[in-house]
Image (cartoon, rainbow, N blue to C red; front, side, top):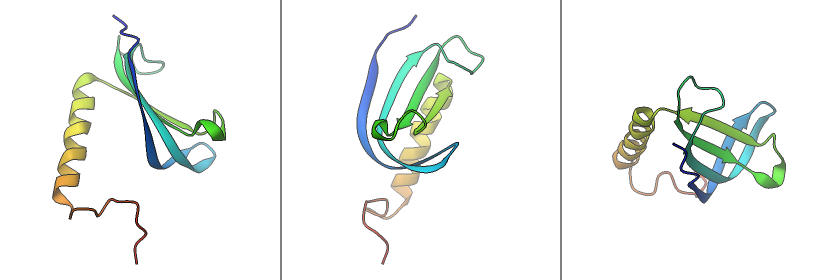
Length: 92
């Protein structure tokens, strides 16, 4: 069942596409039929920079279990790092 629910956020970071690295400014997350993964439905995550055109997009299609494991891994990595280490500030 498709929900047609898409959660979008403005983000700051970088992604690597076919043409190399590009600034990532947006992300969207939704549950839908995958384009490539061999499952009925997946959690789809797009990292993109709309201002840079369609080539500035990295797409991921994950099973529900894999998406939840990714959330847990991100939370664990951030919890293990010193506070503020993954902030925007440049290293000195």
